Image (cartoon, rainbow, N blue to C red; front, side, top):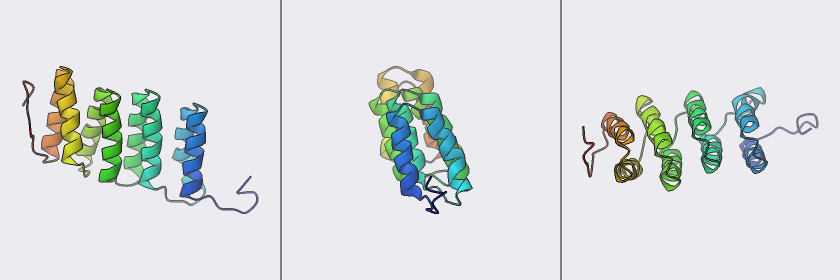
Length: 157
């Protein structure tokens, strides 16, 4: 209706739509909207939109979808350190360590900026929970990102 009325949507508009989709638990629709609508409206989506949607997916315990949104972010623009901090922090908070390790691995493949503290928190949580494969994936990603390993447990490479 906005477009029909000649009102051009903005990143704020898309942020509101993501919030509304999330409240209605319509995350598939939110992903599809973010995938096609900004380009269709001639808007360059800001990284925060992808972070917002990834966080919504994590809160709903939908790790696969959060990774999909992160991949979508990589297609559109380089993720910010703040994006990584919020997403990795939420993975640790919600004990979604495999999802966090996968996102950290994708960040490493893309040579993204990741705050060492958040990568270390993810690694330490994986070690604490004895998630050896997850911890090894974190270590590999951290080494690729040249993030120093402050503490390494039995899963050190």
